[in-house]
Amino acid sequence: MAFDNHGVLYYAGLVFNITSGGVGNTVLFVARYVDDGAVYDGATLITGPLFADKEWIAVDNTGGPFDGNLYVAFDANLTATLPFATMLTRSTDGGRTFSTPFYAPTDKTGELPGITVDSNGDVYVCSDAFDPVTGVPLNYVQVTKIRDGGTTIVQNVKAVNPAFFEGAIPGGRFRTFTIPQIAADKTNVYLVWDDLREGNVSVFITGSTDGGAVWSEPHIVNDSPHGQHFFPTIAARGGVVGVAWYDSRSNVGSSITSLDVFYAESQNGGLTFSPNMRLTSVSFNPDLVERSDGPNYFEPFIGDYFGMSMSATSAHIIWVDNRNACDTRDPVYGCVDQDVYTVAVPVLPATPSHDVGVYGLSVAASLGYAGIPAVPVLASLTAANLGSTQESFSLVFKANSTVIATANVVLLAGYSHSVSVSWSVGGMARGVYDVTVAASTVIGESVVWNNVAVDPVRFMVRLGGDVNGDCRVNILDLARVAFAYGSSIGPSTIGSWNAIMDLNNDGSVDQADLLLFSPVFGQSC
Image (cartoon, rainbow, N blue to C red; front, side, top):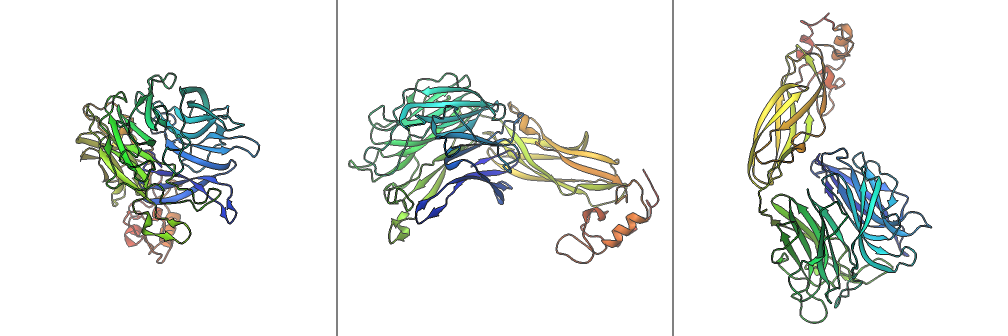
C-alpha cells in the first residue's frame, strides 16, 4: 500500500483464479481509495504478464516533475515464452491506467523485488538474482535504478555480492525466501535482506550515498546470535532508519514453534542500531496455518509480505500473526484464522525535523456571479504536521493573486486537521481563477514544496445573472432559472437541479434567485 500527496491510498494485490485443479493465472491489480483511504474509487487490472506475484508499490511524493507517479514492481512472465522475472509498470494518471511492463533488470535475472523512490524521483528496484533459464540462484542481490519517471534504466548494481540466500529456515517447516527490501530518504538509499553467512539466518543492511552506484559493507541488525531472523522490512525518514523482522530467539528446541516480531532503529543513517525491541506481546507458532491452494497443499505458510512505513514521530509495522489462528478451524486444513497485526513504535529523531504541508484542496462550487449577493463559497483542505515537534503556521487561500481567506493552524507532531474557509464571490471581477492555498514556512523547515497544495482548483466568475454564459443577461437566462424553480441539492424534488441556476448559492432555486435578476437584467459584458 502507498499514499500520494492528495490523500489517495493505492493497494496492490493479486487476482487468483482458483479451481479444483489448483491456482490458474494470477493477475496484478491496483485499487484506489480516496479521502485518506476511506472511500473505494475503483481498481485497475494490469493484464498481459502471466502468473504475477510478489507485488510491491511506491508513489513519487517528491513534488518534482513526476510527483504522483505510481510504480509497481512484481514478478511474472512477460509472455508465455519469456522468463519469470522482476518487472516494472507505472501509472501517470492516479492508477487509472498502467504502462506496458518491462523487465528490471533487463537481463531478466531478478526475482522477489522491493521498490522505493528517492528524493530526486529516481526509482530503485531491488531483487535476488537467478539464472533466467535454469532458475539456479546466482547468489547476489541487485538494485536497478530507473530515471525519467520510471522509463529509463540507468544502472543495475550488484549491491550484495555474494549473498547467501536462504531457501529454508533451519528448524522451520513454513515457506521462506530471502526477500530484499529497499527504502530511501533525502540523502541515502538503504537495502535490507536476510541470509546464512553467519551460519544461522540473520538480517543485514547496506546503504548507498551516491544514488545506488556504490554500497557499503553489510552489517548485521539483529543483536542476538540465537535463533533465526528473517523477512526483514525497512522504512527511512530524515536519517532515521527502522528495520523489523520475524525472530525465533526465544524458541526452545530445534524446531521453530515460537516466533516473534522484533524492531531496531538507527539515528545515524543505518550506521548503528538500537538494542532490538520485541514488538509482539505473545509469541506464535508459524506452523499452525497450512495452505489450502495448490500445488503446495498443506504447506505451513505465514505469508511472504511484511511491511512498515515511517512518519516523523512513529514507525508503523504490519505483519501476519498466528496467535489466534485456531479460533476458526477447517475440518480438512485445521487452524485457518490467520490475522494481520500492526503496531506503532515512537520515533524520536536525534535532530528534530520541521515539515508542514497541505493537500486535498477542494471548492464546494465551480462558478459564482459578480455583483450578486450570495452565500459565501466553501473551500476545504487537509493541513498536516509531518515533522517531529508541534508547529504553528498560517494558510493563505488565493484566487489567482488575490487573497480570499486565511486561517491559522496549530498541530502536534504527526497530526493532520481538516481546515475550511469561505469567501464572498460577489465582489470579484468576471473571469477564470485558480484557487490555491499555501502554508507558511516554519522555522527550520527545508522541505517546502508540499507547503503548496499540488493542484489548483479552477473557479469561474460570470457576469451577474448570466446563466448561459453568453455575456448577456436576458430572458433566456431567466427562463433557465424558472425551469429549475423548486429544485434543491439532495433528493429530487420538482424542477431540474443545476448549481448554475442557484444564483445566491443557498442550495435551492427559488424566488430569491428570480428576484436577483431585477437589478442586472439587460446588462452585458
